Length: 355
Ligand code: SF4
Figure (spheres, rainbow, N blue to C red):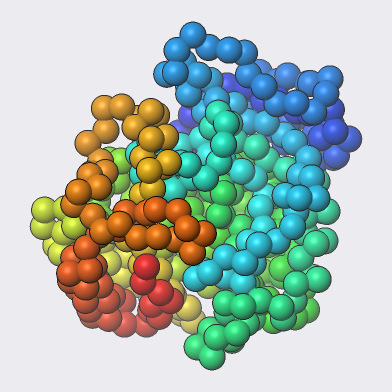
């Protein structure tokens, strides 16, 4: 993997036979080729990498590959995504960064290749059928004014690859034209917002920056620095976007109260003077499953990220699988402190949820 000053340049782009039929897919390949990526045009639709001798080499090869593929109907079927939004839709799947607490670990199977969808128009055309049908914001008295909400960053960080894909800008234009109470939402650990500035979004888009206390950013390899993310958020807010902070994954590291106080102060500074500021905060604590722990320990064997089951509470998810969360007392303490910090430091913000 290489990067220019700020943007990821994949070592290799694979484009499937089906994706070659889409102008959007071909445009992605052209952009990547201009940046120096090796281009491989596949003669079929199977994305496979050459077998590597060891696990590290396989990880590196997958993480430096971007595959341009066609999202089949099963991937275009929208899913509810509480507590963030009514619906989840995907512009891409996977991520090139190296966060040692990546929430995708254990959710996506196979090597960690980033896949981006060439049939963007088909994906966007599938959204209007869901207008007014959600069970999160649409069904909530406090959040109904947000309209039907569509979350685009559940399985990818679409802003981190926007310089290659252009998919987010297209989605923002789509929502800007959509004459109905709707909102596009996505969150990111990147700062490449230039392609989104100046688009007629008509306040139908909420961009959140995924942030954490500065001491934890060391776990977020290959992402952009905290200050750059907050500066980008300020830029978007000044361009009229609704904005937000996704604070995740919250952890009780030594002196965590001061660490999170600094974070909210930095965010407040970045948003100083924004007229018409519409700011939300989502507070997400760290959790892991046996599956995600196994994947993360395989990807980052030297990591000192705390994944000690004995210090956590064991919970069953609604699907019957196990997850490990902080004990109730720690959760209560963190919730009280962080909610108070948001109230004091960012008085204009609405906290959407704590989880
Ligand atoms: S930026 Fe997000 S999706 Fe990408 S590796 Fe980090 S946590 Fe995972």
